Image (cartoon, rainbow, N blue to C red; front, side, top):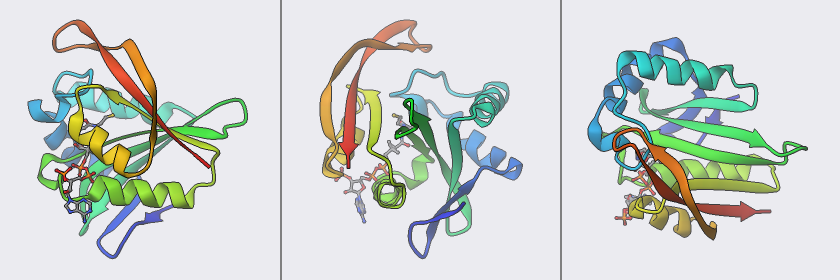
Amino acid sequence: MNIIVSKDIYLRPYKKKDFDSIYNYSKKKEFVKFMEYKPFTKKTCKDWIKKKLNSKNILFYSIIYNSNVIGTYLITYIGRKKHMCDLSYGLDLNYQKKGIFSRVTKKIISKIGLKRFQIITSTRHKNNIKSIKKLKFKSEGILKNYFFDLKTNKFFDAIIFSKCK
Ligand SMILES: CC(C)(COP(=O)(O)OP(=O)(O)OC[C@H]1O[C@@H](n2cnc3c(N)ncnc32)[C@H](O)[C@@H]1OP(=O)(O)O)[C@@H](O)C(=O)NCCC(=O)NCCS
């Protein structure tokens, strides 16, 4: 199922031909700055995509902007009744700071009828936290030493947000 966000943006399930675009931005240092990953190599990128695609509870979308693949958006269904989901996403650096994440997330929440949406992100990811709060997600607290950073080999804290219907 595609998710139409606006005239110029939509989400569709990942296709093999999306790989190069995803790899080209996820190999950059700046892209993984607030995530646990090292910049992706072709192999780690392929492995990451394969693992997510193989997971039965994940919907793996590519974000298309004016016909270009500019990011990924993963909806991970969790909970006994699959009544909630975890949102995770990444946008090509050239397409950040344009409000695309916010527009896409708003659409997903309005289209998908779940009891709870949650986002877990690094406490240092200030811009993302600002956007998440603007989308009226509520902070539910700090998750100490939640992520392990493969770049520094150190644990770091996360913050968990939810939006409940
Ligand atoms: C997290 C991430 C997806 C956020 O993307 P983004 O496009 O910058 O986020 P938003 O859509 O909320 O855009 C917000 C910015 O766009 C600006 N903007 C421009 N036009 C806009 C519009 N029409 N509507 C809303 N915001 C707009 C806003 O001013 C805002 O900037 P500000 O906070 O300085 O005011 C992106 O930083 C990213 O991909 N990072 C790398 C991967 C990552 O860390 N993922 C998170 C894992 S949990």
